[in-house]
Length: 320
Image: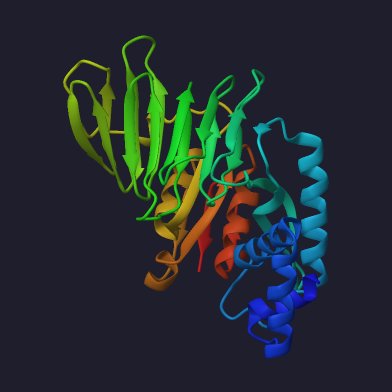
């Protein structure tokens, strides 16, 4: 079935094959989960053009490997109906094919009445992928929960989290922490407790509206605010916003982010130079997340995902 999914995604399937796949997807949630897993692998490794460049058997290997990894390493606790499927985090080119070497976990959580609880162990931070494709990195001991009722993507946060939110103008994404509400449509931002002095919200992309009993403020990309339930709200632009995101295990989350911005953050994260040649390549969009992977692996995966060629050393990477 994986090969049929690829044929449909590539536009090479007949009308009969497309109808067959559509019926199979509707037969069971597990089938839809499998389709979505393969689709995400396909998208993550897509280049321009892709036809004839990828060994289709690799997709099954990617999905199978991710399922085995997820079964061994996932420590999230889920309540209510749910299914799971893997999502490719990053891939490296191997000869004429693509081979996956690390994965995240794509989580579904049932109907509108179900509840989702994500918890990072005390041993370290963990990254999760929500049902809408949004990424969240939870610091050690942090917890994110959602009551699935209602049209909003509304979450309660205890602890620290970094978010990369999928845009959906019909379903606002809302994070509530200690009475402070951060409301977004599509962005990347961090929420961090400030030791009894409120919550710090730092915005990497997009805009976040922060609300408390003391008022509200819009925080733009590159800005930060510290909010408590009763105090006044204001946003400021720090000299080094990225330097404030001091995740011990490393944390890079991108959601439809221009490669130029990705390159800046990767360069900051590893203390190396990353150059992207050509305006068209700089504007290519990247959806991916990384933790403590080596600099070379991260850069080579970006080259694979964007169809670029790259030259990489320990201190310099050039994508073209």
